[in-house]
Image 1 (cartoon, rainbow, N blue to C red):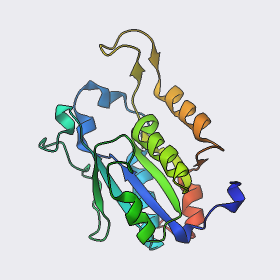
Image 2 (image 1 turned 180 degrees about the horizontal axis):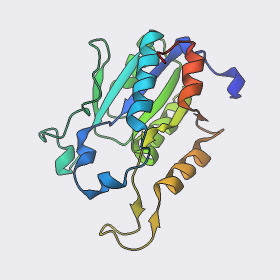
Image 3 (image 1 turned 90 degrees about the vertical axis):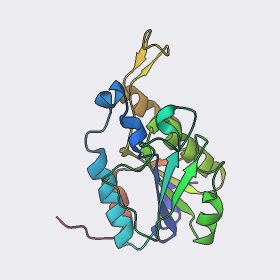
Image 4 (image 1 turned 180 degrees about the vertical axis):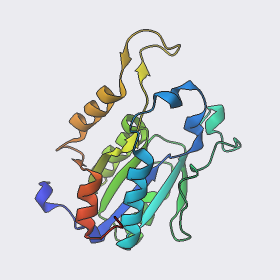
Length: 198
């Protein structure tokens, strides 16, 4: 679909994927990408609220001790404060659709366009964008409102390494024109047609 043919923002929803304290455990948190992640994401949430468009939050659980539902780190990061009408969804798959009720919730709200943000850029965010596109949604991928960490070739941190810049660049290359529009925070806010405080 041509980018000029995309669904209007009055059919859009914001997905905030896996922005949870689980990621702060261990040394890799110090190697995170996107220093402005929190402020970029907060700007988008504020814009969607002002436009009266839905915001969905997703938490990921798996066998890692810090991602267990019993872990004290299994919670949204403190800078997020969902409103009562903003669902919090729990998933056990890399994408936000397969193990959740997200799809019927989006359909119920008339959503045709999803804006993908969260952690990690090349994993749950990218996978959600791909699946969302295959399900028929127009997808905006806001890289500057995603976060990731360097990837090492081997589990013990040895071998080759992909930097966060390389990871984010690769994700944009594989998603662009196939699965998603790569968008900036400013572009999404402009699409929503809302005025934010200076």
